[in-house]
Length: 80
Image 1 (spheres, rainbow, N blue to C red):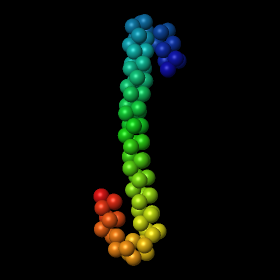
Image 2 (cartoon, rainbow, N blue to C red; image 1 turned 180 degrees about the vertical axis):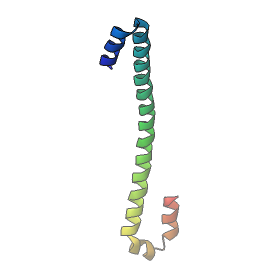
Image 3 (cartoon, rainbow, N blue to C red; image 1 turned 60 degrees about the vertical axis):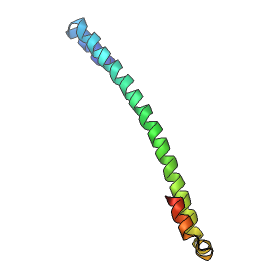
Image 4 (cartoon, rainbow, N blue to C red; image 1 turned 135 degrees about the vertical axis):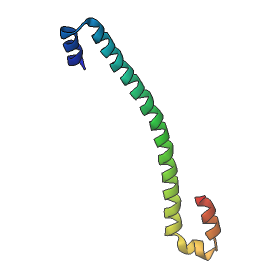
């Protein structure tokens, strides 16, 4: 980015350097904001996925206990 700013400064009018620097700064700001928004969403999705996988593993490993106590409906409700 610095190299392009220097090149534009040497070969073109200074206003091109200002416009390019502004675009670079705007790009960095927008990218940071959108990345933070997506990070929060992915954290929530990962927590929900881990919760589901934990319940599924527990139900599958203890299927005999679930069957013995006739708790299939309870396990189905946990998944919902």
